[in-house]
Length: 137
Image (cartoon, rainbow, N blue to C red):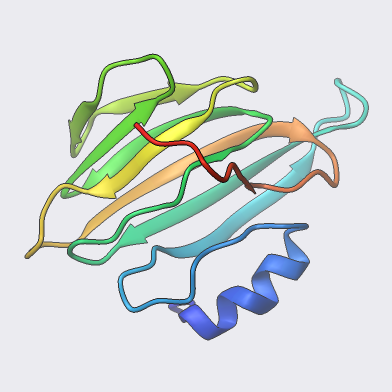
């Protein structure tokens, strides 16, 4: 089942602060799983599927988590603060740490969709994503 942009507002509340701009080219985010990590009290793993329509992009943000990305389809561009812009294709991986600011997250194509899975290891109940206003690449 595909999550619509309107449903994202509801999902944002449920996920504890996930914020996406309500626009036609916004990413579609679907939570696949959330599990507490009993061996690490107070921590949880959250698995998300992110689909970027052609031309979609994220705002600057942070996750306050270890984020492990695996690209399933298409081509995405990612950039962390003080790091070079990277272009990832299906089969590529990307990591961002709890202190990283994610400046660029976008579909590299204006004509083809892109899709990836991200696994976040974070504090239980903490927001999945926190916007960081005023940051530019």
